[in-house]
Length: 116
Image 1 (cartoon, rainbow, N blue to C red):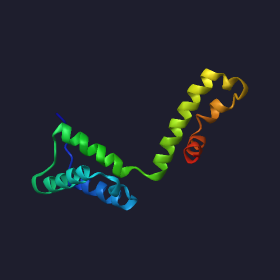
Image 2 (image 1 turned 120 degrees about the vertical axis):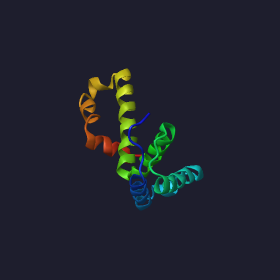
Image 3 (image 1 turned 90 degrees about the vertical axis):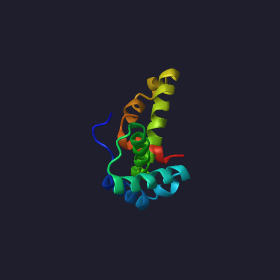
């Protein structure tokens, strides 16, 4: 069992952050209901310590904290991994030897995320 539970202050701060950056609107109905019910519970009855519920709440909190740059970087990282795998298979790194270094550069990975 977890030693530390989720408190009202944590949930409220993440909710406000999610509303500011627009991620609160992207939650489905059940996610919103779970989060609001958890807010009420923690405010009136104390912190939540149930492992499964804390796990679900932390997944929602993670979505609230996500920014546009994090999404772009994740998309670029996914493309970089694909390029590393394909480049190794096709032998592209023999003639484009600097590409391997570029795929490890965070600025290049971010740029890859912006390219459609």
